[in-house]
Image 1 (cartoon, chains in turn purple, red):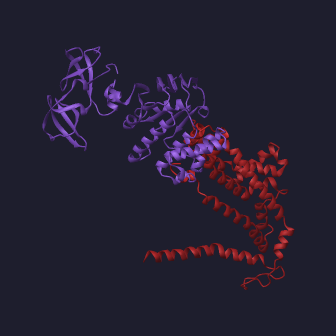
Image 2: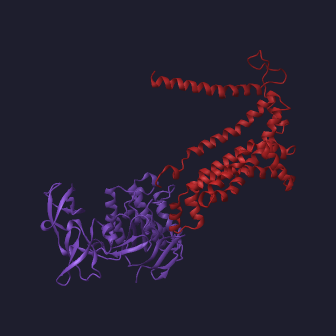
Image 3: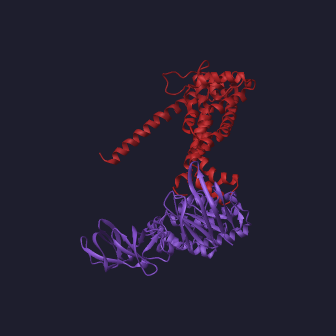
Length: 347
Length: 275
């Protein structure tokens, strides 16, 4: 049985369509991330799932029951807010206890839950403090703890890490994933940070302009983006329009682009002669005879060197571990056909 | 000149201003209140020649001071509470619901305050007579005060309602809170300072209000301002006025202490950026 079944969800605000025709199945204990730029509809989708908004069309089911018109206070979901939204006049303990108290959970059970949550989130020493006496990371954990104390079957995250500094973010990322696994929760996580999405998710839903672009595992999204938008949004990508000029064997096609002929390996033959190609900057092998390019910008990044190179007036990006070439030098590079991705033409 | 010297000079200046402002009038009032009727305090004497508490007992026993105190100190808190209750729905609408013309509505709410009080009082009184509310005079004054000072209440509470954070309301809701629980946990902490401020301001306004209390109330209902005006007007006797003003200082000092406490109890919603 699926944990959350979203069917053809559409949300309109007046004339503006925030979300259109979104369908998604989330499996129990799955960690699904909604990823996209601001205004893509990811927060709207989260609000529809949590119940703060009602869809214009479509249905949401949770654990087999239709919850489309059930208000948030009666849904088996718990939301972690971007702003944490801790009640400032209540102590950490009272904040954690707030949810179970509303649900009339018996005192002994309430105490057991708070002990459990505060131990797992390392908040035992902070229980009697007020939220404004805690650091950002601790407040974030209280917010997570408050959601966990509800013992929901679905936990929702609305960009929970955006107010933390980079180092803490990595740490909390791991913690959220650990807690989610420990409690066996189905999680929906909203972010605009692709690194966060890649690192945490079982599956990522890439949204753009209120529509689902692609739903796949992080690996597939990165290595086999279906659309130009996904290729560009997740990681760096060199995208070239081109025309098929020849075929080698069953599934290797030769494509003529502005930077020269590139070979692409694809299991399904493209529908039209005009295609869009995409490859990752680190897929290029420098030194192999193929495309000649001039280095226009070189940036050493530690574990790799980032080059902006130019061929026939087209600038693209190449990344490699050790690069001898300096700005102004000509280099030779090639890309293996199985590293080149054919994008959906219609997108 | 060093900073310390400047500070010292400023401190002395401040203290002397305070002295002129507070100590001299107070001393004078106390001295005047102790003047015995047997011998007047003339300008050639530093201290009153005969001092007694006669004026105090006399004023307390033989003037309408007691009834005025009772009337004012029942009227003012009632007006404050009534005004608060009447203003809450409007303030909620102005503070939390967005509708076209909201800013204009906020301004319109304040408009009654720019009309001179005596003019409002006269027209409001005729209104009270027309709707027949004047038969029960204390009630009429109470109603008039609650309505007249509502602009303050609406304005203050609107700001308070604006400060309620939507994510707190949403979080409470997400955690399963009922309407009442949501109000208690998300609204009330943010509204509290506004509620106190409203009560206090309407209370003070009502305690000080003369025009309506005079036009509607006299001669049956005497409030502190109407008593004061008459004591300072036709029946002006300086020692009696001194006694009256000193008695009236007591509740004011108490009020000030309460206000001080309220201002000091910082509101956590406002003091922490992230709550």
